[in-house]
Length: 221
Image (cartoon, rainbow, N blue to C red):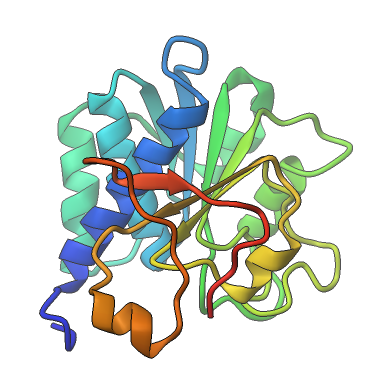
C-alpha cells in the first residue's frame, strides 16, 4: 500500500474504469462496438484488462490479446473476471492472422511508464500491424503510447500514433508531443496536497465523471 493508502489493485481499478469511460466518450458502443484490447505484461496491461471488463458492462464487445501473461495473483484475478464474462482471449498469432480492420477500436495497453529499448516479440509485430502502411481502426493509448519514452515521446519514430490518449493521474512529459485529436485525463483520486506539492495543473472533473477532456497544451510533471 502506498503513502496515500491506496493498494495497487485499487489504483488499477480506478485507472481501467477511467480508460473505459474515456473511450466511451469518443467511440460509443452504438457505432464502435468491437474493441480490441492489447494488454502488455505490466501495469498498463492490467489497466487494459480492467477496462475490458467495464467495456463489456457498457455494452461493447471486447476481445483481449494478452500475449505475455504474468503469474501474479492480481493479474490472474483480472483474467478470471474477464473470462467469467466470456470475453474472448486471442493469441498474438491469431490477431496477426486476421485483418486489424475487423475491430472498430484498438485499446493500446501494451507498454507504459517503464518502457525502454525496443519492443520484443510478439509486440514488435503487433506494433507494426498498427502503423502505416496498415490502416488500423482508431487507436486509444493508455497513459503513454506504446513505443514512446515517458519524457521524450516517440524519439525514433517506431511508436504508435494514436488517435486518442488517456493520461492517468497526470499527463506525462511525452504528452506534449501527442498530436491526436482526443486527449483525456483519468484516475480521479489525486488529493489536493499532492497536486500542490508537484505543481500539477489538472482540469476539474465534471460532476460524477471518471474522466475529463484536457487541452492539448496541458502537461503536468
